[in-house]
Image 1 (cartoon, rainbow, N blue to C red):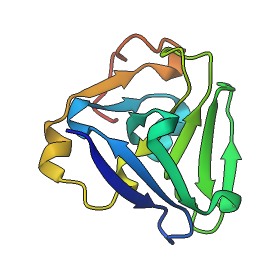
Image 2 (image 1 turned 45 degrees about the horizontal axis):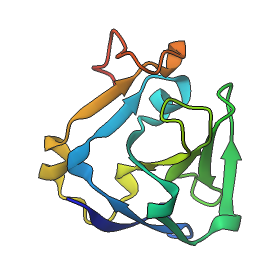
Image 3 (image 1 turned 120 degrees about the horizontal axis):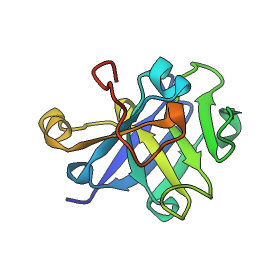
Length: 135
């Protein structure tokens, strides 16, 4: 079910709203940055995302995948979301919202949602990695 969530970084300088259907599924990736952050995300199209505060407080990191913009609060270091440009596996831009940064998430709904695992480490996004227990 589509629901409007609010969210923020740890210190609250970066705040956002997003229209999400968590029950439709979440994702975890095994690339080096997602693994080190233990990122658990939910995908949203740009038109369903609103950055309310703190755009100028975000720092952008790009690794070898140049379409992924990993955004971090420059004050507390938390990664509330990332912007994914094209080309990518969906054919359109989207954002990955860090579910840990959402306010008022129903834990039962989150745990009941299907999880898709991505093999970003091997740039094989359409396949599930051989090992996912650590994600």
